[in-house]
Image (tube, rainbow, N blue to C red; front, side, top):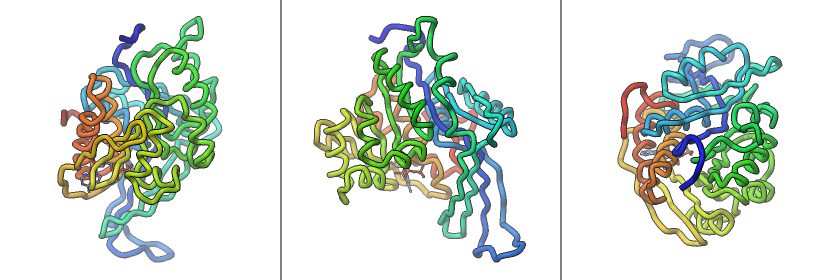
Length: 306
Ligand code: ATP
């Protein structure tokens, strides 16, 4: 087993975002228009995945994320209630990241994003809480990245490698794949254990139009690749081959926000509990199917699905 404190711990380094969701029946006109509903919800792929991991039974979930002073307490309280031990670093020069999500009657979404403080964490923000006096990582479990700054991710990944902590990466991160491009992204994550792209990202990373072929190809670079396919479930690939196809349970989707984050949180919680990749992917699909029936990107507090 892995020695050290916090056996079974998951550390998420990722984004904490405020989601403003506006629903409307007909496309808004210029000038002033009335929405059917406007709600402000806690979000961010990293924070959402951490909440889903706690919800799925992982007892020690930690989150490192950047926020502005404007919404620090609001987010901290919601993460605490979700059972996540969050270290929120306040950036005095940036607001909390915000996504404005416009949803029409057919559930089609338009997203306007400002990552704000979320992508401004630096390597200095990493060390104080997570390294011991000798500079070693206080973690044995999984380190998961999404929506984090590239510099911080590289420093944290190196610390994890030295400590033998498996690293999982969701390439969706705007601060990572988006900024590096496919080639440099794959070089940067060469030491990771698991890559968790959705089908579009798997295609983008490989240039292969077929998601299964893309998953197989990616698994030559990273030992374990799990590609999510929306309502079609997920694919698991290792050593250049697809090793499992996991169906998604049928669900009546009302809001697909956070389906991928739910998948990731439940998948990692299952891996920490000792599940094989295909069984963990099945847990991910179960959580994803629940997530699409809920508004916003987080599980319902207090109601365990696992
Ligand atoms: P998002 O960016 O919206 O969080 P994503 O693109 O990262 O999502 P998806 O592949 O769309 O991720 O969905 C993740 C998982 O959620 C899927 O693997 C599947 O298990 C589940 N899921 C998504 N959509 C549906 C659906 N309509 N019905 C049932 N399950 C779904």
